Image 1 (spheres, helix red, strand yellow):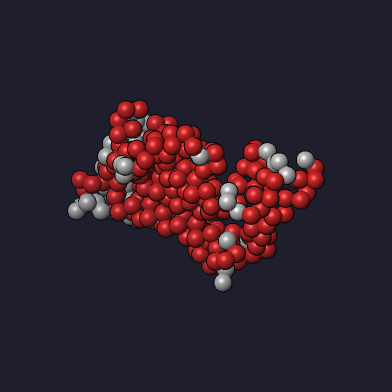
Image 2 (cartoon, helix red, strand yellow):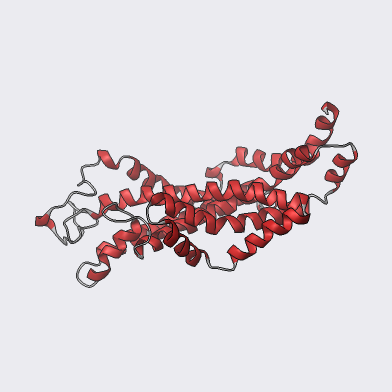
Length: 296
C-alpha cells in the first residue's frame, strides 16, 4: 500500500491542493466579496462578544420608566413595551442565531458527506434506500418541514437545531451524491482500482477531499438559511420562547406596535438581513478562493 499511496495521492488531491494553495496565498482579505462579508461580520461579532462589558442594559432587565422609548444615545435601538433595551436583546439574539446557523451547517455537512458518499460510491440497494428517504424529505419546503418537526419535538434551542438540520441534510446528501457519482468514473479512480486500492482508501483519499470545497460553500449558504428559518420559527412562536431573546421573537414582540414603535421590529429585522447577506457574500468569496476556475 505504500507504493499505492505515493502513486495515487497526487492525482486525487491536485484540485484540492491547488484550491487550498490559492486560498492560502490570497486569503479572505484578497477577495472583494469576502472583504464585504468581513466588514459586516467583524463589527457584529465584536459587539456580540463584548456585549456583557458594554454600558448597556441587560437583555432581560425591565425599566417601566423607559417603555417604548425611540432610538437615542442612551438606547440606540430604543426600548420595548417593558422598557427592555433593544440593542442588548438584539446582541443576545445574534448569539442564538449564529449558534443555530453554524450548528445546522456542521450537522448537515457531516451527515451529508457521509451518507451522500456512501450512496454515490456503493450504489445499489443502499443508494435506493438513502435516496428514497431523501426524496420524501425534499417533497416538503424547508420551513414547512421544520415547522412540522418542531411541532413533534417541541420548542427550544436544541429542538430547533435538530428540526432545521433534518430539513437541510437531504439537500447535502443529494449534492454530495451527485459529486461522488461524477468523481467515481474518473480515470484516476479506475487506475487506483487496478492496483487493488481499498474502498475506504478510494473514498477518504480520492473522493471526499475533492468534494469539500463545494460542500463548504453550500454550508455557508445553509447557515444563512438556518438563521432565517430560526427567526421565522421564533416569530411564529415555535422556536426560542420568551423571555429568552431571539431575533425572531423580538420582531414578533414589536409587530403589534409597528405604527407607534417601529424600531422594535425594524432594527432587529435589518440585523437579520445583514447577517444573511454577509453569509452569502462569504460563501461566494470562499467559492472563488477554493475554485481556481472562478478566479478569472
